[in-house]
Image 1 (cartoon, rainbow, N blue to C red):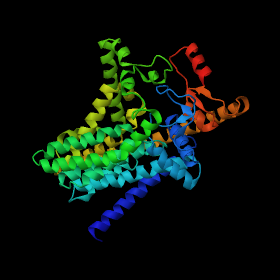
Image 2 (image 1 turned 90 degrees about the horizontal axis):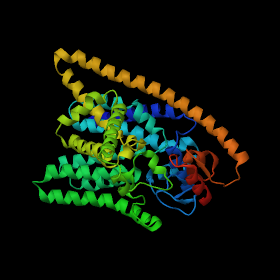
Image 3 (image 1 turned 45 degrees about the vertical axis):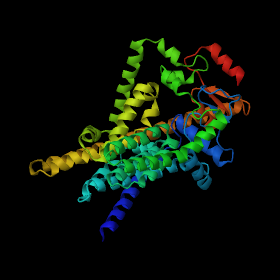
Image 4 (image 1 turned 120 degrees about the vertical axis):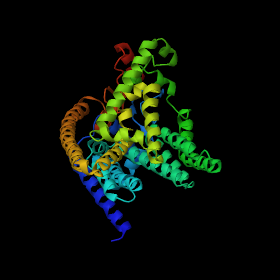
Length: 464
């Protein structure tokens, strides 16, 4: 069998293994987790039914709408719902149909990691196989793949963008910059953190190509072209619908004192209110965001991240440096500039690339030990330990996720029955889980302003 054929069948085997693990968990989840997946699914349902980019949920009040039903995606990005809508059109309106794009993206990520490994280890494919194998049952990636949200798609596009961009720079394939830019655009249309990707790729290009200005300029132009050709139409849509390319002011997110501020109906955060907090509060909130986000990274990449992520700091190849710049910009940028986003699930949903590079880095450490006779046994035992911990973690997480899904499904089935009996059809409902309530009942829903008093709640109810 030729080298290329062997590589192909290894990729097929890795994809099938990853697909089997993800399908196994997906089939145990009768109900989507609270609350974001329901928002993506409901938008997908609206697209699939011909209603288009319309939402029946007021998730936050940063943008003022005259009614609960309004143009969608003032905050979340649309691509995940577009993929789900296609799946729903083909397979029917089921939770599995909504999960399928994420399941496929998560499964494709594993052979992609193998492909990256083949570039890092061109002579010995076993190291690439071992790195990819760690991702097959990785609990974080498996759970994100079946969650019916944007996480898994974002990870696939972001990893591809970093890989293609770094490879283009390393091999002077300048035209690949256009493809890297398109992948950055797809990442951004999946999650807004995709804005970091062209910056990371552009910076590594500047470092590597500054002595070749013609190549640098051409690469930068193609990278930007690929990126903007996708996102400018989206920005123009927002400008037409909301009157602004970025409907929710970035200053409002910067000034948020906590996640609860996102749902204020009145007294919304502003930069002026931020200055009144004092330096101690300002800095402590950002320090807390740094600690929480660091904890998310450790949990997402456990157990191999403890070994693999430090390796990223030691390698100098563009594949490593591009990720290092991306990771630093994500971690420091989000935590210091947008700390309220760091202490919510927003940061967690965009940390999938950390898992891929952590797995690759851990195999460098295993290889280092294996190639020395005195530590070869330690290398074998170390990989066995990592693999065992990964398998144990996914077993525990899978059982917990399935139990939670069943419990929440039963709870919301009872809620839906009560609503059907007691609430007139089409009547909006104010609740803490607006997307999920809309998902199970079809009623328009509004998020409860949890830190505001009853008088504010009355204003909200009277308006909508």
